[in-house]
Image (tube, rainbow, N blue to C red):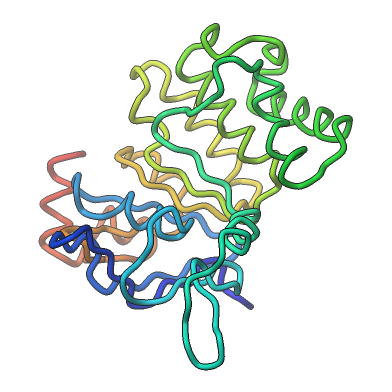
Length: 253
C-alpha cells in the first residue's frame, strides 16, 4: 500500500537557521498522527513542507505516491512548476491556527469558492456538498452568516468544512485550537474526533495532549528540528522511552 505521506531525510533552513534536521516520517492511509513538542521544535514547519508551502533544502517528500515540490527530469530533481504544485495540493487540505476566512464572503461562499474555481465543480453540486459539511460540523444554520458574526470556534469549524469541500485525501492541521478561547476548544476537537472515526488521514500539530491520547494512532515528539520519539499514542504519552519526551510531558500534562 502506498503511504499517505512519506518524508525522507528532509532538511529545512531559513538562512543560517537550521529548522529541520534530516526528518523521516511515514503516515499510512487512514492514520491519525499527532505532532507534539515545544514551540520552535519544527512541527509547523514540517507540516508546511508536506504541503509545499515551504521549500526544503534537502530530502524528498511524497504524498499519496506523488512527489511534492519537485519533479524528475531524467535522473535530476528540479523544482515543480506552479501548475504542478497546484495540482499536487488538490488532494491536501490544510487548516491553520488562524481561520483565514474571507471576511467579505458568507460562510457558504467561503466554502464553495475553491471547489468551483479550482476543481471546476458545478455550483449546485458545490453548494450541496458545502451544506452537508456545515451540518457535519454543527453549523447548518450559519451558511448565510459572515465570518465576523461567528465565534472563533465556529470560524475554525467553517475553515475545516472549507478544506473538506475539496475532498482531500490528506488533512493537515496546524494547532487548530491555539487561537481559541478555552471554552471554544472542545467544539473544534469534537469535529476532529469525528474525522478520525471516519478514517480521514490526518497529521495534527497540537498542544492538547489529552486529545492526542484519544484520537492519535501515532504520536511524534519533536525537539530542535528532529524527531526524538514516535510510536503508538499510548506508548509515547504514557511510557515514553526518551528522557526529553518525559520532561516535556511532565511540563504540559
